[in-house]
Amino acid sequence: LIGNSALVQEIYVVQSEIHGMAQRGGVVNTEIRLGPVCGPLIPDAGADVLLSFELGETARAIRKIKPNGYVIMNSHIIVPPSLGIKKDAKYPETDSILSLIKPYTDKIYLIDAFDLAKQAGDLRSQNVVLCGALFAIPDFPLTIESLKQALNIRFKGNEKVVASNMKAFELGYNKMKEMMK
Image (cartoon, rainbow, N blue to C red; front, side, top):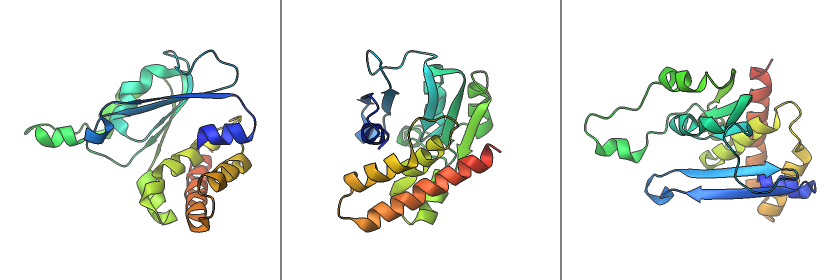
């Protein structure tokens, strides 16, 4: 969706996606670079924004963020399936995870994408909630209009899905604007 929004605006975009056994609860890592760059992989301390769907994964990827870059993460706890296998394993407390992230930036935003997606009418739109938050960042180069066009292209002919995703986007966008005041 982010890449397609860039294409709508005719902004050069490259993307990489790494699936670490995602079908078995592994990590899916996507890196998106906008503008004239040589390759899709973001170097350590090279990302302006880290958008994360799971708190623990944020800690794993935090090395990518530039000093004082934005970290936007879903505050809804998603316990990895691997923890269910280990008898005494516990998911870390949110404060414990935040303590690993805070040395890298003070621009940390926790958004309950699960709750906002539920309000939008489709739990599958949690990713779009977080995209809304991303687009609310000052000087973010992509426009809401390009996102609308990308959604219409992606879900052509399914106005209900487009409307639900736009609602999710707007909820994430408005929540981020409110948090940045």
